[in-house]
Length: 261
Image 1 (spheres, helix red, strand yellow):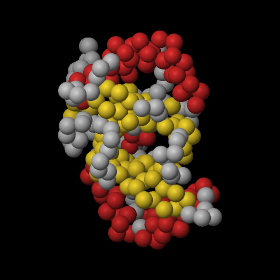
Image 2 (tube, helix red, strand yellow):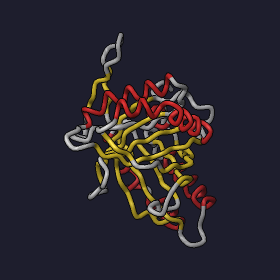
Image 3 (tube, rainbow, N blue to C red):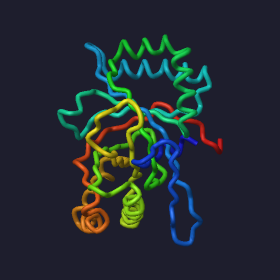
């Protein structure tokens, strides 16, 4: 279930994020629906005198609460900026999600009803002045990770060209993911579209990649510099433009139960 989410994050349509289904068409395979998955993101700053060790303690209390309340369909990560700029005016991101929006809402209802003590614990550690939700579609599934508890996640803001819809980009994005895999990439790839908590966004979607480590991210960078740029031009020239990536060191905080377990 959510183990699919945490080992790979997902992406959605610009035109209608809620409940969107896009059919993947691969030669020799039956069409497979690519369905949007919800994620929530908190952007937080540490209170004076607080830091990562305090967040670890608050998260341990939260996990004990989650175990007590049977929260087995929610996964969470914390992301610390690595490659970043002045616009990333926060210390840590909390990224969480479920297999579907109903499950995410159920987890949130339970938190609001019974998690006040644990919420106070987080509030003592940090102030989170941003809470947003995104609808996500997976573009490329990563391989099994040697260490799924620690990965590197990058975000770029992207805008489509005038007259270009996400439907025009979907198949090129899938082809890009396949091309990268054929050329040794270990990345997972997703598209995030804003759903709740924003307003006035200056981007159409976020292009998200996840790697086991910075070396694997660097290998993708090398491949792009050597020849990947040509394929990118072929697929995306005149259709979409993305800014430079912000990269984060991500630590898993909770893993949802798997369907097979």
